[in-house]
Image (tube, rainbow, N blue to C red):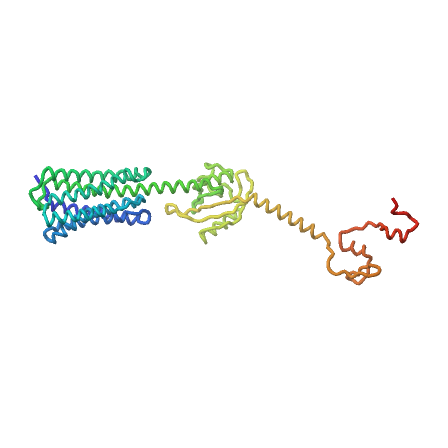
Length: 419
């Protein structure tokens, strides 16, 4: 006994198709900037819905629209769904053979719609078209897609397997139990059951596509979390995450533990005030004011206190961020204590060197000297012996002696240079 006619089933299918469209449109709007191919799925379901609407209008609109265009939308929509799936997993596959298949499908449908009208042949043609495309989808998911993403796509692959099975069953039913009518609305219970099966599979497909996208989002979130967690904990700087309102420390990295000497459990939930982390409380207040005014602090030099009580120097940077809509402060401290000590030692050496250089006197410029007695005139106009002038204007000192020529000239009787 048939409790539903074909027209009622199609009307129900149109309503459920609209719900599927709403789901997939929402999915596309939320993820169109993240993943490719989702818009193809929206168009696919829109084509299926339009096809059902045109089929429901059979007898009220031209036959080429209700027979040819409607079923072309069914197969071409499935093809677009396949193309969207390929794009979603970021693969490139030529669709030339499918374009040829679509052209052949249209030719066969036209032949059995107008040249040799045959409803059974048209149903077989639609079923084979869906079978070929859905089989490609299933094969792609289980054999062509990367092993790393098969887990998230296998549910969709199973649904496409259901489409393949339904198409095979429909072809078998038509061949084993041919209909005596060419009126689609007078199809037997088996054909109506297949139509309902197709619709259930379409709903499952929409659901599985949503799960597939959500699964991929979770994978990306996990990857990002792992990436940032490694960057956070492996950074050589002291990084802290604190609440803006209460100042409690929410998270610290390994760099903070290494630089400050505090253990992880000793700081989580505590405040920097309670830990006396800031060497000067005025610095903390200045940073808080800067954050309130400008939302960030960049490479300001402050002193901090380690767990041991030692004072270290650090370049402090901070910025206000929001986590779960709660304002927090992300702070980074680069330990520059060693560099600071090196700079101080360098300044001391420079000061010492400048002091030493200031003690060195240097003779330069034009010196007026007598051509006969060799006295030098100083800045006050007095003539001085050359050794006296040099002693006054440099660090040089003299030790007196006599050269060979002078010894022979002035002391000829003394053999000062005889060996």
